[in-house]
Image (cartoon, rainbow over all chains, first blue to last red; front, side, top):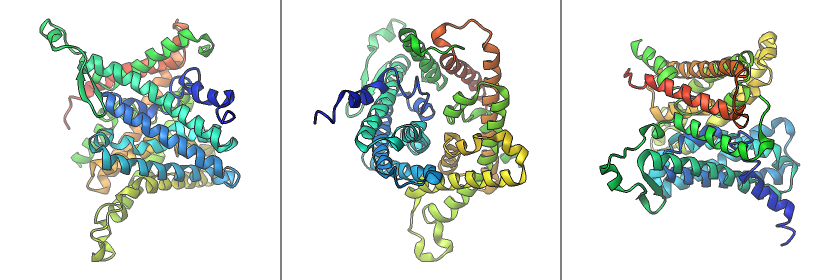
Length: 216
Length: 205
């Protein structure tokens, strides 16, 4: 047990939350990240789905890593990922139909989410299943974390509410504020603001950890 | 004809792959350092998109969609294979990319060497799979519409990446706060360009 959660393995879990974050540092998986962050609920569901798919795809590919011929590995990886994504999609359609409608094509686009291919290529192909599993969970969580931060910021400023799974819409900005002349910032709901929010998160992160800064 | 032109213009400007749906952002951010390479990647994306989306349309129309296999026999009219569409679409895309790569290498070596590593990378570009999935979701009615949609989406993506690469080439000489250099400022530029593109949104075609 202690070996399974050794320091090295725990690092796999925690690094992607900070200095090795898939979105802000490795620049993987930006594609689907931004379109689902208008409300908090789809962002949480998306983060969870990606975490599950990444973790299990990592385990499967890592278990098969010595038998996959390297020439056709991309197709093998895509098939494994696509099968997992179909499972997630069917489960969402069965148990969370509204959210699955909101996510529309973006569940399917998990297949081409660069986090998956990136982690499979960079980690699972060279490591044992257990560390790969932790790496998958860590990267999925790092991705989900950024998604949740962006979604929470956009929903509070854009609609004044927070939508949590199971709880429905919670009002964060009290209605009395609106009577005094407060207005929602409609710009935050529009897609481009997601990009600018990520830009600001990167700014914040890189001004704290200076070694991440680029030279030009 | 007018309808096709409408779809074409709409998918370039109003439903732009990058600015409205954030598709293909990974390669968009990674490759947009110079105009020359981004032009190469953009052309490759247009090329692959106009081949894969129509092929996936045929697949969807005659095999995957609900009741689409009636042409084989009437007993198939209740069959709905659309849950398989992700895996079929991505398999088609991956194999077509491989095929295109081999054909281009054989018959147009100059184009091949200029596209270089970009061709294989396109298999995992979300804009390509996104094209097929949007085609399925929006239920286009004819091959012509699908073709107009895929050509427009490809050109919209090309436009976006070339524009941002040109801005990035210039911005190298500006004074940017150190933590924003590189990735951060590119995100913000893309956001501002996205706001500019939103001015097309009121247009009804």
